[in-house]
Image 1 (cartoon, rainbow, N blue to C red):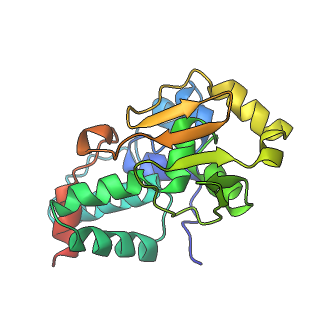
Image 2: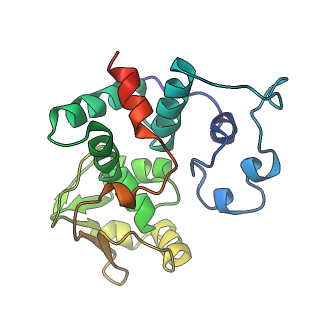
Length: 208
């Protein structure tokens, strides 16, 4: 499967915004976006006015990198969002928020979305008492996500939980820290997506 070979910090600098690809480093003073808030490369400091197709492409790339997806995966999600009732852009964002790898990250059960994908792929999580190894699994209202019993006892998991117990969790998610489980209390809305993206540009790009 193809993937973006750029370093994760370089990707953030290209998009000129934090994509939170490296966990706690993104919140520290060592974050390259904080220290060098311009694009990498020889002409990174140059002011470039982006219009039309370039603007649409940048918004798509930014959102795709934020959720750690390949182009093929992202297109499939857009197609599904376009087939649903309602506004396509909002459908896309709320569906991306419901990816299992995103849920375990924003909950605090993983250091980053990449770390969440690793944990899921290695079989550390269950959804409604069934093991799930697909990071792109879409959770539904009422679903329960929890660590498998043996996984919850590992030092790596305990360390992550200890570091993130005070993390602010979105209102559509309920966390039981003692039981190491998550309940999907409601479906996320557009207002729950706090990442700065103008999704209408992505819709325009794929609608050509």
